[in-house]
Length: 508
Image: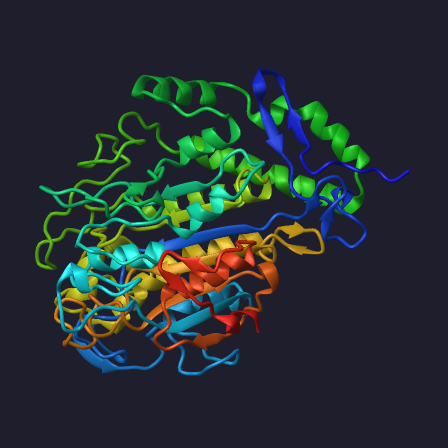
């Protein structure tokens, strides 16, 4: 008799510990596309957000200054010159090319959030449009498709992830919202809404979790600390006790003995990834205080960097305004991947950096061979005395894309039914701004404060998406791309905020 396992099977131990399982062949029908006991394989949706523009302020797309020398060089701007599948990867797309992922996503270019070029009055903002004050004026319509009527960083309707989360049932979490940048990094001010990319409704943001350790415990322990004391005590208890995998050792071995060779290999890899995640989390320094709350200033935890020494390149230091966002983003991507694998949630958002981010880019750009003494926001505007323009901006964008590529690669390497986890998902990469006419004055060109010439990347094959090319859509609203992606994972609505219409080219 063929061994059949229900999709919702978990391995439980004393104390309420439960470990979810990936999709196995013994859970599927003979076609590999539906569960033996509970319907079709679920579809997942995720957004990875970068708080930066895609071009240099006042610089053409092929112009840069590198190490004090002005250069003209094509291929640094994120949008390829060629249309369709046969294009040359640009500098920011390098991490995706390196992981052989060019056939797994589409790049949609030429996107634009509408605005009134003749009026700065809130009453004249068009449907789905931007209030004439960047950054805040462009944030809302990008995230939720509803017009902004002030410069505040807020949404006036639900974001795509929360619309989908509301329709999702049967998972531990309706959505997972995380952020890699834990602090604002400018003294005398605060995030003031720039840390939000997920909203359940008008002016109702979802607070992102910035601690990988707390995310891990909420997913796998079912525990979320409510106070600093509880968080510190739980951290001690977790480090002192045996790992969750050891607690389910007998059940794990019995299951491995009953499944086929392919399922056995898949389970062993799944358990190895959980063990690796435990090891990496336990190696992080203990955190206590303020991690779950919106920080007005960097917390006392030494793992969080202090404020930048200054805003301009002649003031900024090389070791401030940075909290190892590189490692944090990797850990959070690991957790999103595992949450999807175990069907703990089907909707996730990873905000790598905040809107108008002031994270120091010296550590990340140094690692990529072009050290820039600036924060992310100023890199787009002025760079530093020696490095400015397109290539420094694209180097920062390349770093953001590397985390997107990391998540996609993990999802692609996870077999699920007849395909992969990535095949059953839609994953968006969303930069904050474009590179066109300035929103504030509606005149200046090649500006970072622009909602023109925006791009979105759309990965996965959920709902029949056909990835693998450059899709130009001049003047289309970013919300039309999001609506297309939402429909790919089962959304039946025909509007996203105030935006209607889709991008049928994403389906081939």
